[in-house]
Length: 551
Image (cartoon, rainbow, N blue to C red):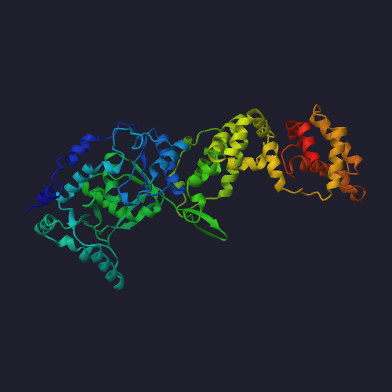
């Protein structure tokens, strides 16, 4: 019996050859230097920050080079597939504008691109043709070892302090004759197809990773499974070979945890005579935890999952900017010189990535986000805030819809000026910063708050009563308004100027700033707010008098 006869026994329905598929998926007609990249998630969970970083890099590489960025659904491990994961991944890409040029969406029955199917479970026949070829040339074979047998071998290797795995004399089914293998298949014994490695673990070969540079890696000598006969689906390693070759991927961006798989992948590509893509193994994302630094964890850290940022209401630009700062060390310098450019104009260099871990800092994200939000026009911020609140805070969304023009004026306080106020790190911050501007919230929330920084309630009542009866006039400009507060301060024994109080504190109860604080707390129940003049102008005299009457 020949290898070809064994291959025909295992794959009797497969008639197409790898040459047929080469013709079906020819080299892409792109300009020189164009990069073909992909985001290829497994729908076994929701997208995390590491996935987002790799997809951002892949998108950036393709867009900067006039190339192609495609989305591939690697759903070969269907027993672990999480319901809704595919839709979530697509939503995240669309939300952040990382829209793939080629894709296939099963739930909406839409697709784009000539190199599909882009769902691995729909590519069985392609994989089978490639596995069949390996069997025909003697580089793959069926393995009938049970889980119990493999576990026993693993225990033996550990006991004898031998490198674990299916290699060398431990690759038992490699020694089966073609006839023995065929007989077991005819008898209905379960099996997997294993790749027959020709490598020597004691021999090293040079490999260039675009992040880590030139490294030496041991040759692969593991006979790894490449397909389960029970499902007919390939393992990640084999699907990577077939899909990235036929889809003409030029650059593979993935986590550095895949670096140990490079020897296997290199051998697979060489076995078929294919050119391997260039690899960009990105570092782990790290975070500070007290005095130590550790890998960000989906279990411990809510910010590890991408849904955290959308729920918190971080602007799209802020999240991308924060990721770009850890992708390349020179991005912030570039951004300073190109404040209005889209991030895709940045020249990404894998060599400028950290090879020891990318430190992600939520405080830095907050600062980036505050800066970005402060530069938005109030009307734009209103639209984005309403979109977020409509999804995550129905109470606030109703107020925003009820008072659109009024809300825009609130958001515009200390905004259109040389140094705009930077109060909001995200949209979920806004309600808690401006709640007092809405009577509906003030009437409810004020019951939960006590007066801040002022102990003498009677003094508050006296100052506010006199101020609104004698001094306040909505027609006053800001200078006249503040001078009247100085007059009010003097009437109650407070210094008109802070400097005056500091020079002779025993002569005054306080200074004009203290009186302003009394008014601010009486009207808003907050001791720190944006411009008091603008707040009073927007609230109006009648509303403010009603509030102070309830003190």
